Length: 208
Image 1 (cartoon, rainbow, N blue to C red):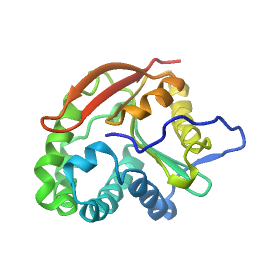
Image 2: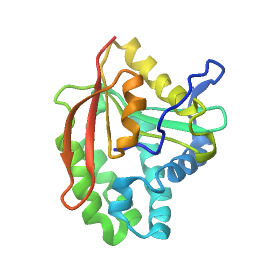
Image 3: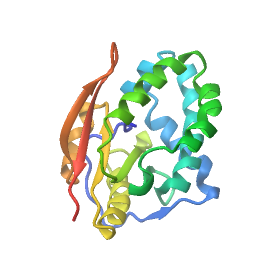
Image 4: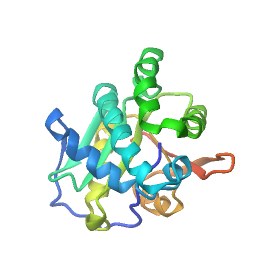
């Protein structure tokens, strides 16, 4: 989907990342829930902050379980930053996966499920036709933003894409993120508007 506030960052060689395990699940959820607390798309889906915070904890638990199977989850040492990726072969959610997660997402978003579905359907409709490593979520804790953790977590996934000689794709609803993603090799290739909601930018990074 979209990406928690990152803005510009320094680049640091001393930050290490690893592939998340089941033991990292709660830390990953907590980082993403904080990172997306004021993100435009989730704020549109659930304008009430308390309800949004509860929904994000549930939704990112579902996303973690999905993407550990369908791609890879990377985090820095203390989960200062996290990225959730889907592989080119599983960039699009399969029918069984969609059925399996329908009720959990309904429980997460409650009466806001209609707006959540509108956002999700537009994201799916704007995915590139050919498979890419798909950066579905990226976020960092507020006290660590601008210190290189977010960029390191993204580069960990880009290294996987480069090893596969594959393109990488993301979308964001936060214009403040564009400069960071451009610095990592992404370029805007399309935009779309959620009716009465936020604008999205779809960004592609060429295979290397």
